[in-house]
Image (cartoon, rainbow, N blue to C red; front, top):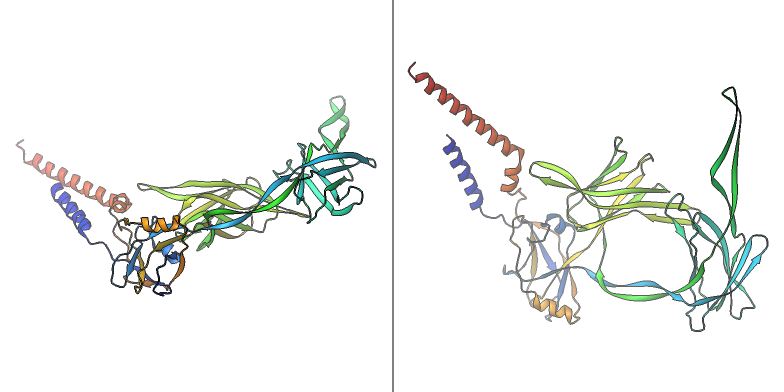
Length: 454
């Protein structure tokens, strides 16, 4: 009996292994202008390709009109970008004067060869403060013109890791600056409270509280001026926004967390950005993906961040992005740790990540199409040295388009032996067969015992 079952399973696995690989499920004609000249074409992958391709794109094939496979180079989309860099404008503090009871006036001169200032930073190690400043400029140090009427520097570290010491200046060519702090001190309440109680016969008759107030002046260590400079950086990987297919928000009251379950379409994601209507918050959050070990499923954390927002008067700051190493998954989960705070009002979730393109050298007069959609395809091994040499020499590629997707074969679930062996159904069948074999063996043994002479 056991031999028969073993033989049956062996034949089943042999048939599975001997089955032919399914055909590519989708095809996309490539649209490009063929003028008979040599060119390097770039085809950007899109949502339908990401959704159907394997995680490493091993099933992506480029075929000409004769069915001949054409080599290509797959790479992340990159581009040059211009960034603003902040560089110091050397300066020297010329004078410090008191103004009224609590105010101060600081006069700073730029060095002779320093670039015109686009802003300044008030450097101080002080914490938990808010001060208003006025900035004036002068070409000769005598006639002063207003530049900034009401700027604010602050540090709210008692409540949140938020602060601002920078002041942007309008375009100017002044060499002398006057920084005016009308009230350069603030009154702070002592953190210790003095409590006096009067007792009579063990009962409290009177209680008095005393709170000390401290007058804390603004301590400026230095004032740094700076200017902005535009620089074009070398080619770097571009980031794209990817809308998610769907997301669902639920609350885990036991663990005081918000759970956002996201359905994606295998896009190459490196992060999620949350859109929220909650104005002020700071929460720890993490991104998780499902991970299967045998028949057990668990969630694995792939990234975490502190989500923050502060909208108060002229302050508008947000950081609601959670980054992680690139993934191409169907399902994600964001866990937001609320502690005892109310849940955030989440209105949308947007994926961010890289984009991919394939580069190839078309032959004049040929037409091409992409084929994809086979889970068990072998990875191609192409000669991409000519394409890489052109890129090193600085040749620019020409963008080509993609026609709509066409299904070339029915979309069927391919037989996965490893998945079958790890499935609960297979284990249940095997256990059932083992129980049947054991029962039959016991039954046969019992019959033999009955036939023994007594």
